[in-house]
Length: 459
Ligand code: PEP
Ligand code: CO
Image 1: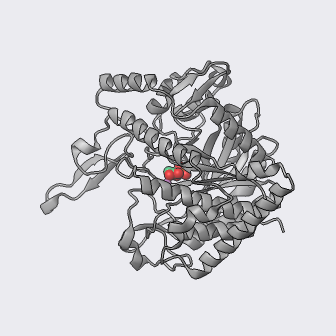
Image 2: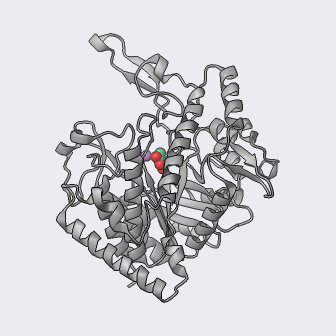
């Protein structure tokens, strides 16, 4: 991109003049425009002051004073917008964050991959399946997530439908409404972790060891909090205020731009579908539509960074997405694959040296594999190896690792192999429900939090 293009005026539709990676072939332009207009008149899902608060917290994490825990489904679905699934996701994020607060001795901000994580990039635009009965194979558009089309392998389901954006918005709204009510109702009072972990902890499959470790830690933590409060310690508020921010991949720019507005008494434009959108590994081209769109909004922006990213690309992303080097604005989420970290990460950390960037580690997306039986999985060990390698490289370069990004669920699924529960390839079919990437189940996620806390513990 030339300097002139980079500084040319931005508006919520300026991305339309740029090449769109992962384009969506809506067949009916009139219906698309109508759905966009409809969305643009609906109230925002989040507010600018929440977004600004998250920016402040990310700025603190950039200085090593806070840690960000981001996690949730690979893809939310409309069908799984259910109370118990949402509550379980909050519980596991809370429990992991508590483990991290305890181990890292600093406040932790929770950012869910939820209330809008409905759009998925795909490695191929189409999917071909053998026809039943051995006829000619059938090719249809790939499934891009419930914001765009539907999973069943039929032409009707796979045709992008713009009104799914409105459905997605509505489901994000009811998800958020439930989350906000639970939090307001004291669901997550950190003084009483015993209230919100009970049903979860009676679960038979949780290993006694992990249960004991967790219970010891929560008792210590609750005692510590009471002690600090008795001393009038002001930071307690900060440690115990439980809040959830939302995030999703900003893949469908029709959706993102329809909810992007100016707000009274503030400068600039806000994307009010979510607190922290991120740009995926497949859409982060500096000259492309996604980078163009997100450069113009005030939200903190994540960018996924894979092993083939070059130091130059990172510098350009910093220049375009954060020309003023503002704190709390830019988050690089690395997803290298465990064997690539040591080779690729140091040069990238140095490339962004001197810029205000929050480095987060996504140890999931570079570690996918397919079993001999064709099941997509990830191994707990590879995920942990990537986390450890990133911790080591960051420490060696003197850059704080400011957060982690997981695909996880609060449920007892069998999608990733390994962990103390010893899930094997043979166990995978038992409870595999992800339509997209495999997630850590609640026990694997909690165990990962303990291991990470140990890795990053200051003492
Ligand atoms: C994701 O986070 O689900 C994803 C697709 O990640 P990436 O862009 O890093 O591949
Ligand atoms: Co994923």
